[in-house]
Image (cartoon, each protein chain N blue to C red):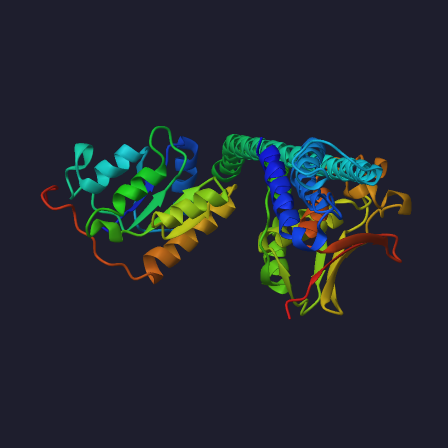
Length: 153
Length: 360
């Protein structure tokens, strides 16, 4: 299975729209969704519901929302950049916040890109298309592995 | 206390001086030397030590130097007059010195008061600035939170309106499509209002940093983003080639163009196709950008009012809008140290212009 895009997003409407947008942009990589920071970390570690790496492969790209109930996207980002090897996973922030401070903090914590969620299906599809074209096709990734000692095949 | 000691010492020194000069002066000028002592005592002590020195000098002088010596008597009228004259001099010197010291003291008290006042003002200013900064931060957080809380549901409404159109294209009548289209448009207007409100708040609160920006690139992006609006209005936006580069803030400049072009598309009579023209002219170190339209125009008397926030001219009442667009333009240009204005063009429409420093 092609490496998926892992979307970390709590708003179910936004999840629906993004799924439709990626479908409309004919992105072949599957879109996996977790709804909070804990879920994101579980998925990336391969614990909890996500121990089967066959069913839940490591993603090629992380789309990370900021404002989520409980721990914000920054928590995931900070954690991720501390993990050996796993920290090479490209992270694109996808948030409704256009605040300078949020963008600055995201970059400080090691985000690769900061995108503001557009409104409207046409605009979202365009966004999905560009994300796929740049981050999945054009960009050269460095392989990431599971955290040693966890995950089965 | 020290001043009296100084006085005493000064008198003693004067006495010593007179003793040393005794071989030359003998009985002449018994009191003259003490003038020095009294002056010194008065300089350092003021009126009372001066008077004390005078009195002490009279006693010591009479005893030691006025005939008959080593007694408190006075033989001649001349000597008595000398003593009296000396006493008079001493009083005058002491009095004047006292005045001088009083003046100095008053000055010192005043200076102290001023310094204290300044310190208090400083504390007050610091306190008020901190309060203001807190209040501004609170306002910004509030506006950001409101903006976020408003845009999320708006995004949902717009998204589902789009999805209905897409998924049920076969099942929905022409009227149904029109209604969902109008939902999407109303949402878009609200989104613009929230966006403008947020941008306006930011402009009021913060310093914005300028850099070299390409006007051509900014206008190209803005027109591209407004593609739907332009088509829906059945209008045309013509952009001159090579507008140039200026020292400005990219996002703010984009916002200014978006608002001016949007106004040009919006404020036209019903039966006319809107046409907006964007041009630029080089003028001595600045670039004057013009956005002209063929719309309803702005009366000369309204030219200042139109840039006030939430001002809607009566002629513009029928047109939807927030009343913030031009206020944003005004505030944005000002923050970038530019100037702006509005004229009526020969078609009866409006020419908006703003000037920014050229990048070279």
